[in-house]
Image (cartoon, rainbow, N blue to C red):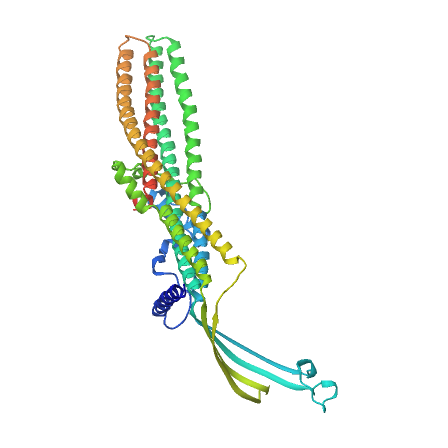
Length: 473
C-alpha cells in the first residue's frame, strides 16, 4: 500500500513540476493569470461588451450582413455570455494563482508591557511579574510556494476546461442571435413581399374598374359590374393598409433584435440572400458536422471534462502537500534599533482523518459529473433531432416553393384569359374578379413558401452549428 502511495505521489510531483514549467514559460516575468491559448477572443466578441449607444444609426437600406454585425455588437444575449466568460476567466486565474509563488509584506510597531508570569517566566526582581514598557517592531517579506499540491493542480485544469466551455458558450450565443436576426429579417422580407404583391393586385383591380366604368359609360356593361369592380379595389386597398402596418411592425421587431438606438422602422430590407440557396446535405454527414461544430455541444463536452478533472482534484485532497516558506526582515525595538532575521521552512501536510469530509466532497463532485454527462447525452439526442427536422423542413419547403410558383403562373394566365373574354363581351367581369382573387391567394402562398424555405435553411444552419459562417459574409 505504501509503495502504491509513494508511486502516486511521485507521478503527481512530476505532473506538478511540468505544470509549473509550462506556466513559467508562458509568462516568465510576472505570475499573472492569463487566458489559456485555446481561449483567444475574437475582436467582435470583445465589442459585445461595449454599450449599444456607441453604435451608429440604422442605414437607409439594411442588408443582412449589416444587421448581423449590429446585433452581434449590441445584443444583450452575447454581452451576457461574454460577461460569464469573464467570470470563468477570473476563476481560472484564481486557480492558477494557487500554483504560483505568493509574496506578501507585513510590518508592525508596538509599545507594550507583558505579564511574565503569564508566560511561565518568574523573575523575583520584577514586581508581580509585569515587565517595564518596551518597544517591539517587525517588518518583513513572506514568500510561500507550493512544491507539491496535486489537488490544486487538477483543480486548475478543471477551471481551464470550464473557461473554454464559457468561451464556447459565447459562440453559441452568437449562433442563437444570428438565427433570431435572420428569422426577423426573413419576416420583414415576407411582409414587404406581401405589401408589394397587394400593391400590384390593387393596380390590376383599379385597371379593371376603369375598364368596366368605361364600358358602363358606353352602355356595354351594367352598373353592377362597375360596383363589383369598385368593391374589389376597396378590399385590396384595405389589405394594402394592413400589409403596410405589418411591414412596419416587422421592421420594428428586427430593429429590436439589433438593439441599436434609436429603435426605428425608417429603413428598408432588400437582401434576398437571407433566403439562402444551399441544398441540404446528407443526413448522416449533417449530424456528424453538427456534433463536431456546434458550440453548445462542444461546451457540454468541456463541462464533462471539467467535472472529471474536479473529481480527480477532490480525490487528490487525500494526498500530502508540500510547501516552502521563506521570510526575511528586520526585528527589534524600533525602526532604528533592530536586526535582520530570516526563516526558511518546509511544511508537509498529510490528512489522516477528516470525519468523512473528503468522502462527501468526492460524492458531490461525482454527482456533478453524472449531471454533466446526462446533459451531454440529452444535447446529443436533441442535435440529431434538430438536424433531421431542419433537413425535412428544407425538403418540404422547396416543394412548396415549386408548387406555389407554378400556381402563380397559372393564376396570372387565368387573369389574362378572363380579361380578354370580358373585353370581347363574352362574359361579365365576375370571372376577372374571381381570377384576381385566385392570383392574390397564389401570391400569398408563394410569399409564405419563400419565407418558410428561408427559415428552414436558417434552422438547418443553426442545427449544424455554422449559422454565423453561412449568413455573415
